[in-house]
Image (cartoon, rainbow, N blue to C red):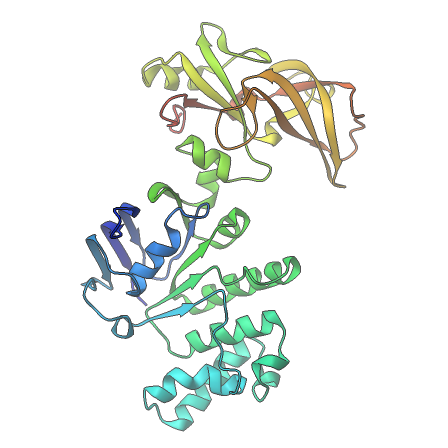
Length: 378
């Protein structure tokens, strides 16, 4: 096992395009770290630079304290798992899993022992004599992981390994990967564009956008204390609701009225320079029905339910609240919908007014120009 450090790492291509820009990360020994972000954000490029499959333009990468910028991929002692399984169709499961050890001239008895041990961990023992074509997608992905495990590398690098699986298999494999990494304790970097995978798997998550690191923190911190508007909109499903507003003496003037800020949030905003133009953010669970919050301080307003989604344990209502409001990643909309999560027994009809309450303690305030959070440390 080993820690991995990226020190101001950048990647520029011949045409001048910069895919990764001065990326700083310090990944601890045995840590499970997720690289997440939209397509083209630089996450796979960063992973390939760690693996040695892409040359580094600037900066330094260290594995177990040793600089590896010029080290060949085969000498970095890492194992990669790709989204395409890259299994040899003419070999059995056992032969696929032990192939790297065979190339390294490992004794046959040792290969058999390591393959057997990995197969037991991955529930593949009864499939060792089968060919990849006889296996399901989830089983083939487990074989690919087994091939990486038997090498006992310093680190695993996984590039969207579950993207070819159906939804049910993805959930099952997500659980299997998390359990496997906990048992092995091997440093793991996992690339995904799926924020659900990111927050359920990782010890810490690196959120990237246009090659720039936006925030590197635990899943809980990303959700509860996003440092940037982009992170707040990307992490969480449904996404955080946003509304442009103007800071006033009474709170933030938005399309649904003047939303008051608790003292701690107002103090934080004022400490950030007292900006007038801000973006107010609220997670769907920050809303409730007025009938259930009669004694609680907060902001009360009436909205019209435009879409109602009953999910059994909860009801999600989408409601319009006028100009300059939205519930997606960037505050650029003329008329938007917000989402509120309500109890499953709430009876809401489409087109009917809904009396809602907004918890001021769960609000976030962002600078309208820079997208930086003004309340992350409140």
